[in-house]
Amino acid sequence: MKLTNTQNMKSKSGMTLLELTVVILVLLSLISILFIGARAWKKGSDRAANILNIRNVQQAVRGHANVKALDIGASLASTDIIGSGKYVNSVNAPNTDISYTYGTVVPAIGTLYLVAAYANGSDTDYSPDAATYTQW
Image (tube, rainbow, N blue to C red; front, side, top):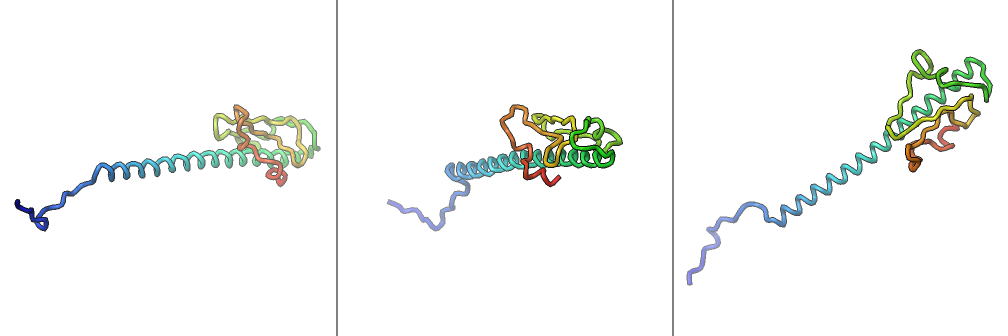
């Protein structure tokens, strides 16, 4: 029986099926983490844009009430503060599932004039809480 010379044999290059499967699984895991992070980033950016809209409208209401010497509870239409050449040019929701409800009077301190609501009512992340808006 003749033995083969193992020193002169060339090793086969390439990847086994198991190694290839592991690489694919690692790549898929990284891609799924990326999508989860992108979804969280989008939700956070929508919430931030929504809070900025509410803050801008709230500041415009306070400014308009001060300039016109309006008392709390005085009648106030959204067209008095929102529009071309007004305090705020326009208010656009960052997401189509968000709707805005405007008040009809100058609100008391700590009360919002513009309230945001998620379309199906299941998500409250788009409206700031009382601690957030009492400083406006």
